[in-house]
Image (cartoon, rainbow, N blue to C red):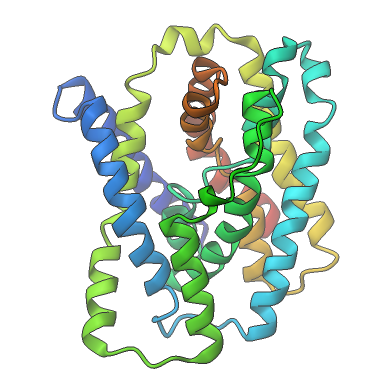
Length: 305
């Protein structure tokens, strides 16, 4: 594993994030444009990245590898859920916000940041694994996650699982297993559109962070603890558990790196939808995203090198 290449790639992602932050401050990007670009990324660019991951010759995973990876993805979430159980009590958090603190630790930004970061660190062939991980993420986030965020025992709405990421991820798995032939012109189109994902996602994240009052973020003491647990404790525990069962270094690396992603931006969106603490969610997304630029390459170097 090339350490200098990892640091270089993460620096590039950070610069993109900083450009998005600056673009917002100089009114080139706004809250409205963030929403529009996010829709573009989520519904067009990211699905193309997912679908394109199975077209590349860099994919070395076998059918059994894919099945094992999906199983181990559930183990990653199980580790996170167990860690979050005592968290609100340890933080002495208000009862109404207990579920939100659990959500911020259990669910990482495996979509917006997962694809560009994993591709930057492990190469294009690893993106296929991220699409598999997103299947488990979508099912759990839009069921258990909703209950956590709302704090009111909201009922799971199965229609939430019908989204572009989930549909394309399942299609990618089908193509992978069936070896379905795809015309070259379609492959090239999908791969070209997919190249928008990384820069667009990082610009939007940077611009979104610029909308959050920095002073309010750093005045919230509990967010520091959440950041430490999300970015350090969870990936270290994940590594300690999975290293005994996952022999493939690429698979182990992707699982650990995905467990180290900052809090999912879904925390804010689901808060708006289900009456959670939107400000708390935004603070968690801000600080964990900021710190993850340094913590992810550090963990990859220390645990996986």
